[in-house]
Amino acid sequence: MDFNTIINRVNTDSAKWAITDQAEHREVTAMTTADMDFATPSFIRDSLLPTSPILGYIGTPKTYFDSIIKWQAKHHHLTLTPDQIIPLTGVLPGLSFAIRTVTKPNDNVLIFDPVYAPFSSAIRNSGRHIINSDLTIDNEDQYCIDFDKLEHALATQRVPLMILCNPQNPSGHLWTKADLTKLVSLAKQYHTFIISDEIHQDLVYQPAAFTSLLELPDTEGISLVISAATKTFNMPGVKNATCL
Image (cartoon, rainbow, N blue to C red; front, side):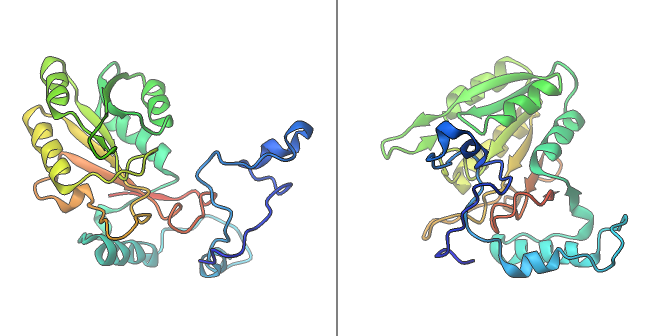
């Protein structure tokens, strides 16, 4: 990607920059949604051109699954098959679908607060109840999970689902393999399913390393991951994501 050329997106129908359409906000610098002002790579833009002059219904090509399998294997040590990949129109639609599939109306869904605000909307719109597990700040000024409080929440009420954001949004904090191992252990003990939103998995500063929930052993049947290439390559307007 070209990180040197900054593109002026004012008056381009950009949702992020729409505020500058208002006279009193002409000089505002938009820093709202996760939408960068760098060009989406040309190899992606070129690939979006249709192979036919007719914009009709098409199936999901084999190359779609192959690209995901190769990327996840190379960058995140995951071994996947096409049968393990469900195409989605976005992370949030996938999350809403998963909530409705894993839980029943009026069930409790636990989230780690603070977190990406639309998680709460997805839960409420599904007719489920939100259980907030507040993150704490450690001695290195990093968010951390209070596992004692988390276990108390799981032990004292029925919580069939918890939703994780990794890397964590809004902080960018990476949950370690030890963190994920504890979560999986508690999930098994209290029969709680885990959905992990890993859309920012590729935006990690070295030498830090990202660990996918699916890298842990024995997560089959108790977890799923939702991710997308939209943040990695700055193409959030392309409505595409995957459930793994």
